[in-house]
Length: 85
View 1 (cartoon, rainbow, N blue to C red):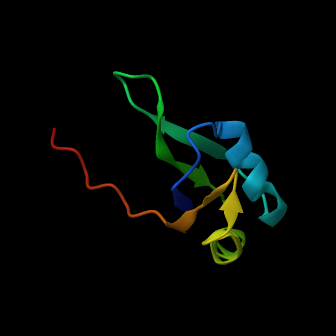
View 2: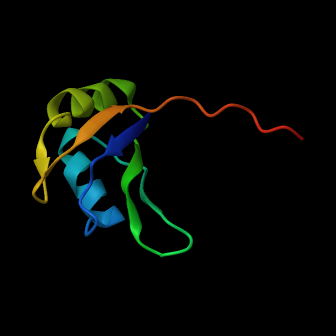
């Protein structure tokens, strides 16, 4: 399951994100989206969890929770539209 996390602290690192979700199950990847020009966090990221039940439990528990002084929003990520070839 791909999970979208927004309103992250600009100090948050991918390791912080993985650590936040780890109590709910296996985390296969965590990434923070970075602005290419400024090299700073955009304040959101994605977490991949292979087990959907664990992913849903994490979403339920963490949506609206405080992390690094910010109230985060957590939801199932929308599927990306296919790229035109």
